Image (cartoon, rainbow, N blue to C red; front, side, top):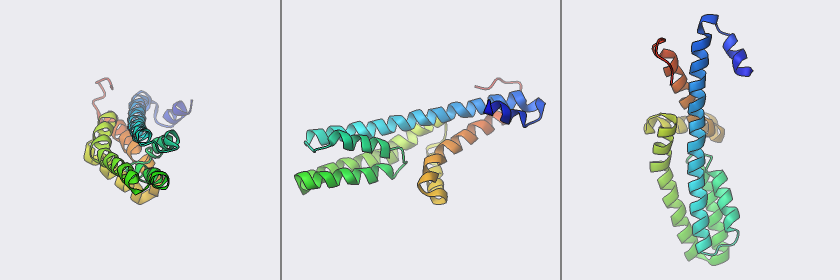
Length: 173
């Protein structure tokens, strides 16, 4: 109902095209959410396994926290990972905490260089550099909230504008 109201704000001749373009953009937004969920799940499960192997107390709870923190692109894993390292340091000493810190660093690097650019670029149909630039711009302009909405906003706008610019005789995908 809300989308239909938005479409009706435009001239009648544009209704069909605008509706189709908006639906294409919405599918891209769904792709972003699936990609982000996959990355967060990878982080949460990986750290939970490391913490369980090292017998760190609250391993499952820390894994869930890492999972939730991973929804904040590029910095969420670092912040929640620091908490996991602190708990490990308090319970098992510096050597075990160093192992957890190394695992977090490997995951941060994997996210920054592999997961974010490649999973997200495929799920949102953006070039990996565009994903990184969107996150940097979003963070600069809006802090954490900007980082959270930057990639889905750019992806939605990209696919919607491409759909609107496409040949009107061609069906939208």
